[in-house]
Length: 260
View 1 (cartoon, one colour):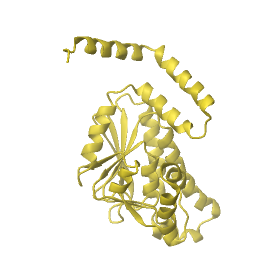
View 2 (cartoon, one colour; view 1 turned 60 degrees about the vertical axis):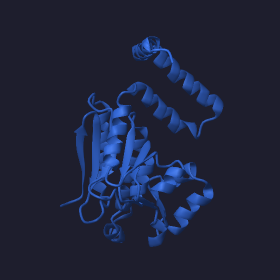
View 3 (spheres, one colour; view 1 turned 180 degrees about the vertical axis):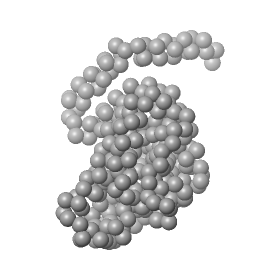
View 4 (tube, one colour; view 1 turned 90 degrees about the horizontal axis):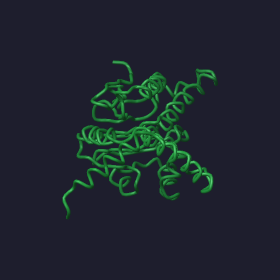
């Protein structure tokens, strides 16, 4: 079977599955365009509240296909650049997608597979899953935003050790460091991710979109500028019907609750 990005809507969640049997779900350029197209369609889909990105079978993704990459010298510089641009376009699409995106990791997330997981808003990982950024071991530097994410998420020494040695890091440690959002028993990561997605589906989609936008912009903004952005989003929601209805429902439940 050829490499593909499979998609399925389960309840209110779009599940995107990286599929490349026999190669631990190695990535293929065709997946990048498919991923961007799927997110573009899901953005306006009223039956999709959340996206889960996972790997088919026991592995999330081993990253780039080294056989294909080792033959890159036969391609033109423009063709080589197009492959990287495709991956980076997918990473940016995940980051800017206005609905939550959950990475569901079993087995191994390596190379660009690790980069894709880092681009997601939340990571659910199996207890024994491993993450690895081993580009340096084959004479390459990371792509897919991995260096940006790791330097923003981890202490410098920890991030540099991962990138300079190519050593694996466990889901357990990444959870302790705050990179992995939630651990799950091995084989149950998808079930856990779908349960989390179901919880998120009950939240205000507009508010979650604002939260993603504000979170993405926070790192490079001054406090003064960011306060203005928060004000703009807050007042926009305050003037809308959704927030009013949700506040009224919350207050009614609180008033009807029995005293402690």
